[in-house]
Length: 288
Image 1 (tube, helix red, strand yellow):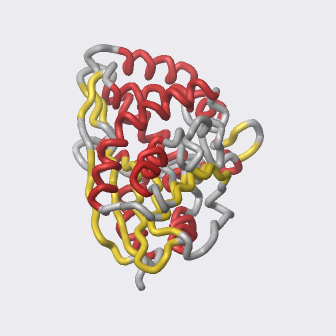
Image 2 (cartoon, rainbow, N blue to C red):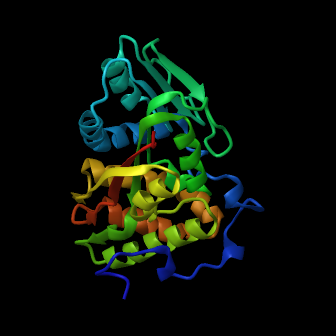
Image 3 (cartoon, rainbow, N blue to C red):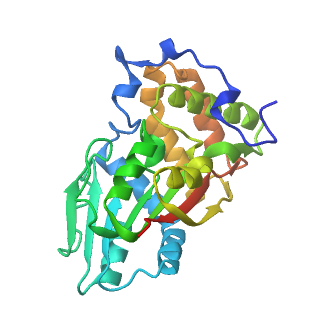
């Protein structure tokens, strides 16, 4: 029985040999949405900001980010949090918006430094920042703990790292006759992505412990979740993400074209309801 408890990748067996994309392991691509068209990805990121920026800002306000602070945003997306930070830390502060793909970071205020950064292999200047923030980033990395250690290394002593990551353990559909089937398909795909080291959809639950393993003193944490109906922002974000990823998932053998069509029909039905994936936030301080 899959439902009624926190789900995870161990629930479903996946044939590793079948997870292949164009003759190459999906693990070589590392991000399932790499090939998404720029306009479609920008719209998806806009929804992500709309959903999660209020909670992120609330946490940053709690951390008392103030004028003069030096801040690094890793995986900056469209730069909404970098925009907010520059309004808090100037004059006298510094904001760096870093991403492996900077195509959505145009038009930011001149005070924001835009930097191409691959946190899997790159380490910005050490001991340089009072705050580092990342959101929905670590779950896409093959070695998230290594990335956290790299981010910890750039903090000044006493500096804070705020990480926010998804956990799809409560991601369940209901309200439609095919909702249980779509839930099972969703978690089967997640298991395949985890097996190929493309995405760990259940990373959020491990985040607090990962911060301490990275050398930080855990200072706090919380979880945001909810319920959304078809057409609502949280549901629309999930729909856009699933449909953008579908071609790569089909090519990799993680689902069929028929399953994709059936899934789209369930998601578009007005009766369908989704327990949203949880956003787990944890923050830690680098010891003095």
